[in-house]
Length: 181
Image (cartoon, rainbow, N blue to C red):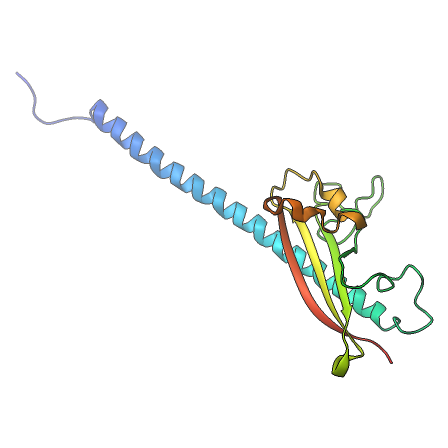
């Protein structure tokens, strides 16, 4: 005689439960990966904004000396206007410090991923004592691939990164600087 009251789960019921649970766990794992990627991207955007603001402040400090005899020959604003120049000749970390092997400056982790460029133009007319400036921060889209970054940081490479824009993230901060009379 056969019993009709089950005392456990059948193999098919267990397999269906495992399958449904696996799909749910895979979805949760994918969500976690996307969340971590979003957090990394947000952190990099924030670091780039801080670096751009720092670069703008550097240019602001030098703009007060631009029209005086104090400006050294190697000053940031003593170059050809209306073209991109480098603020960081080598990659910098999220704090703006270059990698320094064996020294305290910079991060020895692979965070030297940012380059900073600037552009300026002297305004005329009613805005004669003003400079129109842009500070651009670039960094690779793929955190593991920093090839080409050192070349993009150099003066000659200030536009080289534009050859393949799919590889780079950029942030450009505009500004207007007043020069001392």
